[in-house]
Length: 88
Image (tube, rainbow, N blue to C red; front, side, top):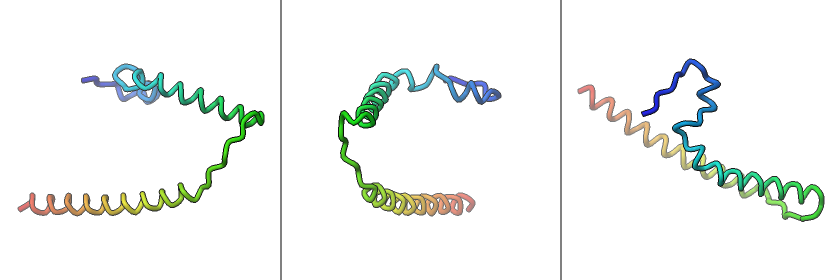
């Protein structure tokens, strides 16, 4: 188990040893480079990318928030039942 010194928040924020960063960094760099290339080509008018309508993200966000609120309520109810029955 890796125990870090929590006195220095800056070192804790940029910790490398014992994290998942070395494994995901190659895939992350591929996505960043591809995104930067597409933005450059689109800004220079070499490539015309279709615009994505925001209504899809809005509807998905509303549905996700409703679903998560129901799950959160159910979890809180189960926790509250456990607390009440555990005190008996």
